[in-house]
Length: 111
Image 1 (spheres, rainbow, N blue to C red):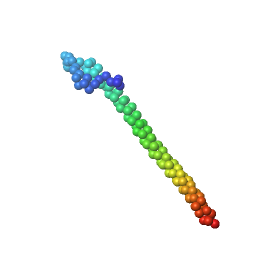
Image 2 (image 1 turned 90 degrees about the vertical axis):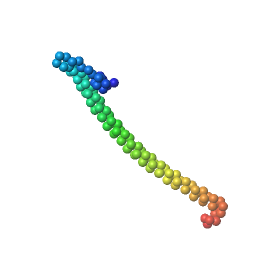
Image 3 (image 1 turned 45 degrees about the vertical axis):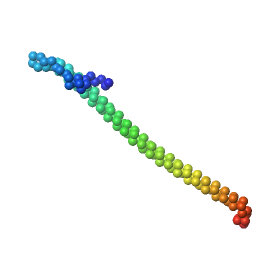
Image 4 (image 1 turned 90 degrees about the horizontal axis):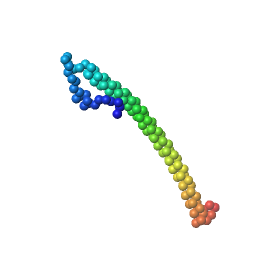
């Protein structure tokens, strides 16, 4: 996985052989060296993940800001388009009414 050599179970179940004066010093030292290496790997991985996490949080924040900005721009565009469409539609309606009045009443209204 990450170059980790020991599991929690390995550490808990480790049984050192006893010598004349207690545990064999070399065996304990070798085991402690493995534990130290694992802690170094864990520490480096935690640092790497912390940096990656910070970068990802910034990307999310930037993306949210960009989304909000884009949404505001699209709303302005939609509102502008709607008012332009509304204006054109109102003009067309007024023009049609005027033409209908001319057709029904003739030029009497405009004399």
